[in-house]
Image (tube, rainbow, N blue to C red):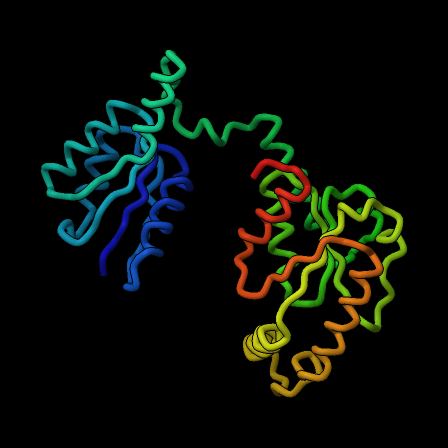
Length: 267
């Protein structure tokens, strides 16, 4: 199997994201391995020596430390390993444009500044108020997602939290009364999530198969029941006058981007 190594002198998340984005462009099995805290010559040598199949891999690097980065490139050339440093050229370009020398500080993007603590607070908020655990959070939220079960409300809330947005979700069920607080806030804060009924049925059946011993014709995934729920949700969303997003075949990141742009937040 071809391997892409995501190598960093910090936690390596950026390198891994680039590596996975690269791998996703090919219809074959590619393994992505994250290699973190490669910040000395010894760490470089240890990493290179540990690669078993040097002719069947490549390296995507976000190493910031100049001497370590150059040594890594040198060792790759010696071992005929393809390497691309995605951060170096960007830092150099910014340095020229700003007429300033960079700090060359590994992991600087992850510094525990005000934005970092804002993200932590938003994540704690999303967990505390998930699935209407406590409706008192509605008036304090930046965004409220509402929709049927299995429309990706919780993962979208967590993604938004990682952007520093306080998001909570209110599930819609015909048998459960909609929280009054939802009608008392700015409708621009409310996002309704809808989905194609056939996809929702498939998602629910898949969940039953994985997590339940019950049969597939359970009401939760019953076609008639799903249509009734969708009609109910549509009525509630129209009554709320909120923005509605169709999440059918839409990635969580894509939906979150639409929400961020709608509420005027930078992604």
